[in-house]
Length: 429
Ligand code: SF4
Image 1 (spheres, rainbow, N blue to C red):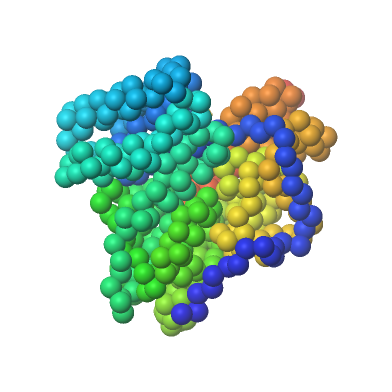
Image 2 (cartoon, rainbow, N blue to C red):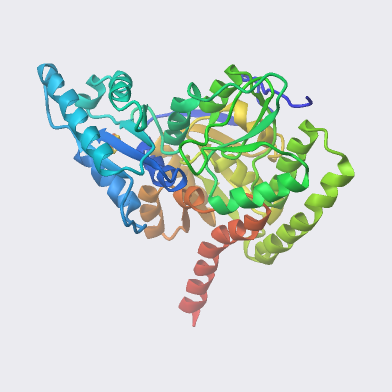
């Protein structure tokens, strides 16, 4: 195989790299439940947490309408250690009720949070005990979405990692491909069509639409990331034999083309076939992006750390839309999954890992970029100072991967800038 496992500890981006430690303003990993529960259609997410957690989940999910939501919060009140037995009983009761009431649920995730009562609970053991009790009805596992341990997209990484040990072993001599990280159903369908045309078969999306879609894994498994926040799961899959294909993320016409080319190369697909299959969608994507280019070209953009999508988004915007990158902040830097991106960034771009909120905001205020991509909490403050912003969470919620979404991706950034120019014209008239 021509696939490469990226080693950690070396960077391929020559630009200045800074580490910041201080106050952060990033959602916790519970937020990822919003897209995970939409993706895995027969999974239930039971947050073991406080009223704050329940509130976060409900308000973050408030934009969507559910007939019957597949998440809930088991609220644990103040208890001392002596009260922990009650906590386990309570959890036992809630889970039993849930399983009895919701027969369509095939996977239950217990999701840990950060209140001290929850930290005292050993959710992994609790999940194992509950699994033994409800053996034939539902698979039960746990992961942490705690704000102490996770930023919002890391919740997905923790969730997926918690299921890796359950994946069946791929038969010796067999080959398969795992596409790692949540993509929307429509993106999965488009990708599958292209894989078919490239003659790449036995492709698994992880997570899949159903909790039981568990790809077999072994030395014949090739692994490609579709999202940049799945590094720990990727490591767990590599530990089970998978070989990681190094590529930029499938964002924009160029990113999508490079992503498919890297996979095709790992499968030794003939170059003329690959170019023939990719040419039409690539040209269509380029046209769709170029229709937004006039609104984006020459603008300056600043990424505050939030979703981990910052580096690939910056690459797309500079490479394909002509934006200048002021600064890229990421909550943390994972060399393993980011290696295919870094070499494509302009060398002078400053990359800041971590966050120290006040100095970070000061730099935004000083440079006054045309657009700042940031968390919802920060956006309001910057907007009130006349700065245009884009919520990074929208980039996670929207289907943005692949050729057919490239134009929509460009328009997500163009919209706030167009709004700005309308406001300016309005104020002159
Ligand atoms: Fe807040 Fe922690 Fe609950 Fe997240 S897990 S909502 S950070 S209390």
